[in-house]
Amino acid sequence: MSEVNLGDAPFTMTIDGKRVEARPGEMVLAAAKRAGIAIPTLCEHKAVESFGSCRLCMVEVTKAAWKGWKGLMTACLYPAAPDLIIETQSERVLHVRRNVLDLLLARCPDSTLIQRLAAEHGVQQTSFSVREQPDLCILCGLCVRICESAATSAISTVKRGHHREIGTPWGGPPPACIGCLACAHVCPTGHITFEEHGATRAIWGRSFELQRCAECGAPLPITVEQASFLVERQALDASYFSRCESCQRRATAQTFGRLARWQKLGLTQEPDARQEGGKR
Image (tube, rainbow, N blue to C red):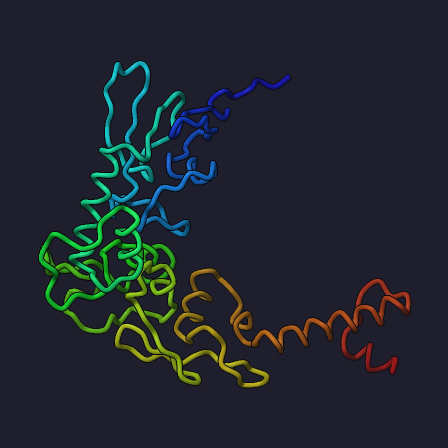
């Protein structure tokens, strides 16, 4: 009989008075989500590792053995552990969230997401001076991290203090961008926008040509640069990005039709074109 690895066994902890099962290596936020306990966050996404930049997922943690000591921790980065006691709605936690949202309202007063979260926490308007020429960027860093992990590291956090922003060190369009839209898809506030007209996509001040279907010529939802990047990075055949969805379905249907025809004739595999031509 093989030995049981107790280090891999699930364990329990308490969140808001509810016993919750967690797994080794799991963070508090993930365990809470699986248990249906909502903890707000702005910088967390399943496509990238947690970073803890927004501080909105702060929770209060303790254990019975800690004799009353409690600490404020970011749920996305704090490891789940046996017998942890976690509060997601304590006054200390709510105070931190209100302060974070108060600051974000000053930075991005026009963001409907920030407005909604702030209102849910009783913050109707900011107590700070609203930023001059505000936009929708909350500096969560999701766009930078997804570009680093899934694309070309074309953008980064630049400048310092209240001048901090997402872009390139020299302020121009990012030359390494491949127009993949990963940054736009993970942006929680909709700050990163793009436009598509026909076979052209525009983002970050650059214009990209969309890949076209080799059969019907329709634009594919991928840029020429992105296709080349994926072919090289994933060692894919270039033909993988040569057909649109409709043409691919038609080609697949034709292939299955040929296979069914030859199987009906009792053949175990499809003959090559010369053999097939000779039997017609």
